[in-house]
Amino acid sequence: MDKLQIHGGIALDGEIRISGSKNATLPILAACLLADRPVIVSNVPHLQDVTTMIELLGRMGVSVTVDEKMRVEVDASTIKEYFAPYQLVKTMRASILVLGPLLARFGSADVSLPGGCAIGARPVNIHVAGLQAMGADIHIENGYIKARARRLRGARLVLETVTVTGTENLMMAATLADGETVLENAAREPEVVDLANFLRAMGAQISGAGTDRIVIQGVERLHSCEYEVLPDRIETGTYLVAGAITAGRVRVKNTRPQHVEAVIDKLQEAGATVTSAENWIEIDMRGRRPQAVDIRTAPYPAFPTDMQAQFAALNTIAAGVGTITETIFENRFMHMLEMRRMGAEIRLEGNTAIIKGVDRLTAAPVMATDLRASASLILAALVADGRTEIERIYHIDRGYEAIEEKLQQLGAKIRRVPG
Image (cartoon, rainbow, N blue to C red):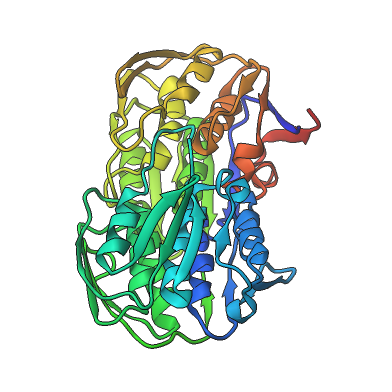
């Protein structure tokens, strides 16, 4: 199993291109099941989770072709079965996103329950309750959600909690339902908006995406289209923090500054100079030590849970004391224990981490526990004295395309070696 070796102490300087969004690509690939003709999706990131979703579609008999530029063509007309096996779903919870499209288009779906997750429970009861309200017959048997419906009916659905995948699954299902569906307390994330834009490109009638009330008028069929996935806001934020933590200068291109405003605000609070235009952001922290910042995660447009681990790393070497409160997922502080091995001063109290900045971190062997935790360990290693080795980096490959190559472009001493 590969690991990363990082020699810390280098101020990053340069520019990189941001990849397409993982969290937009996965639901868009699932939504291709709704079209009666081939669909082409571009700006798809080359990631393990994307490979898993493509493999899942292929297992069902869907024709998927990928060219050298990661343009993906999906033709669901060849589908043979409406089944998402545990072997694939357990490696990627987003596999649950095929449930709504399969049920809406083909009237049948057998999808494995996702099972455990390192960062806490993410229940699918909201997905199930919403589909049942739309007329689906659903029962859970041998660890599988077994759903049947002649044709789904429009309904008013008030989501119990704000859920991104729940919003996406029900929005996809509603596109082919009979009548109007209203999603109240819907997730507002840019990835939800991107999925709605993709569905509209296929002929869906959707309004309100990006607000907490989405209205979908069901149509008879969805057709082919070509669509470009939006840039990844979490990758954007991660490389901006890399510039800040190393007292460097980093410009990220092919991104959307409006999607990372909460992150930019915190970087400016930490003392960074941030400039941006329509599709790029530059952070300059040269010659300055960051100031500690307080973070509280919450659904978009507030501070994203997927960026708290990176700011935890920033706070470990910042001046002062910063607190990080995680309100979305339990068990999302496992990276804190690994950073303590590098000399970080962190105290955990329930869902809050109190971090007192130290002058320097020191290299140590550490282990990635989930996707964003891995990113925080890389950031900490970039400023640690000596050579840090990070194991279990398959987590990183789920969500960051060519992370060592991009960091090398910025001057980092990082390489992948066999475990």
